[in-house]
Length: 119
Image (cartoon, rainbow, N blue to C red):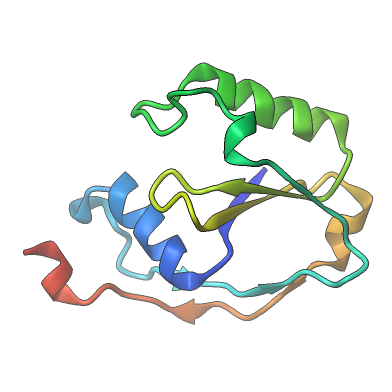
């Protein structure tokens, strides 16, 4: 599974809350992707998630839901709410799905955080 975010700003926040700044690689990059219109996207709403889905660590039920989607291979993309900003979406990608090859990935671009974030 490839874990992505719908926007670069959300991807940055997801990384920010999940990694210690000392563990960030010096050669961090961002890679954009275009999901073509003919690629179906399955979507999970907040009311389909366990009541404590934003807890840390995340409830095991979330892993089970993701694994079931991955193994079921219903779609190449699963859109889920972000625990960091519930109104925004993370996109999970299934590289084993036949339509995954239709997702267009951009070139890696250097990415870094503004040093003021680590105050």
